[in-house]
Length: 104
Image 1 (cartoon, rainbow, N blue to C red):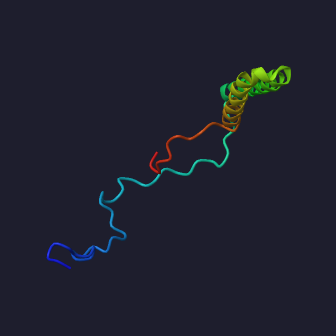
Image 2: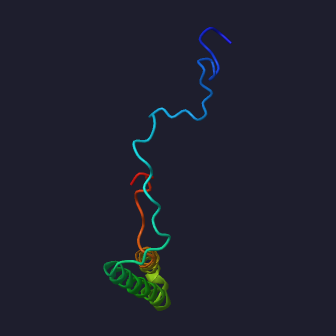
Image 3: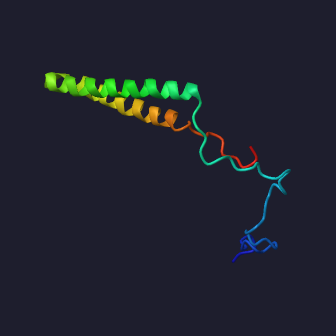
């Protein structure tokens, strides 16, 4: 090694267990319940999105059965149905937690 190169432990640091920000200001928040039922607003939105998913899926199948010329429309309706179904599942299962920081 040259005079400018040195290992990680040259200054007494082994790279493990060192917190550059110091100790936490307080204890982590208590864990949330494993399942929280969705609010009524989420159920209403989820049900509406599920209906939209079914309608878009039905429209996609109907369009492609009518004529192969409707294949682009069928693809768009099918994609919309999948996305609406995905959104409905998120809404009906209680939503998504966006902040997973342990102190929140």
